[in-house]
Length: 300
Image 1 (cartoon, rainbow, N blue to C red):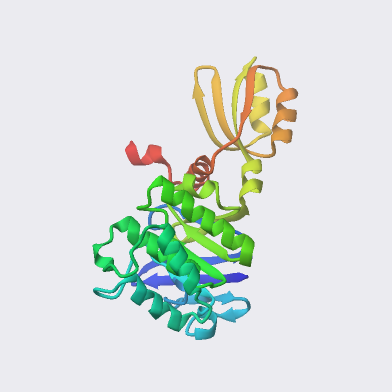
Image 2: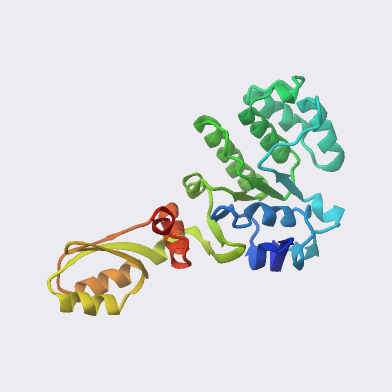
């Protein structure tokens, strides 16, 4: 398990990460989402032990990760921007990582390189952005670490390769309980692979929840009330995150289970009422609107 305790990181006078506390359980696919500049990459680098926290700590299986080579052997970090040795080949990078990660699987490396159609002796600087991403995933998976940190790993991959990478992650999760932690702006990419999500905003964490639990706890309602009194009574009893009115139609984003909302609607006089689920992207927008990150304020 990765324990993040009151973690902060400051660059000059700016807090990229500010007092974050969260747990990342083993055997789950953890999605890290957030607004631009929320601190996702900085947080991943501190989990990997690349950056020293300004405050707090990261514990990996109960041990501090920073300047601890034994702990770092259980972590592979895939950066958003790929960095390889100048003029190196995949074969040379494999040998480099093999010297760091003693459980590196050479046979698996050969197999995946063949399946992805990547030449092991070709210069990496001739690879496309997507091919470099594929290579980084192959190296990460074959290093056989317990934790795989992925910063925008799906960015630059075509749809077929994105699905291939997801299947590899799921297979590794089932075979050896690998724990991927995936930071991404593309929420739709995370929705079908992650089972737990942490939402960052302005260096802090808004929540860290099971994805299914989160979806079951926020819904969208569309309602037309019979009277203003019915409307006012209903709205007064709801935990409303956002409200939009178009004529007599109210569109509400509300916290609560579907059963609770349907019960409340059954006790209210409405002309029309419907309870709708939200996607991860819609939940992200709703949660960040609550703390003032509203698209209407940006384009107004």
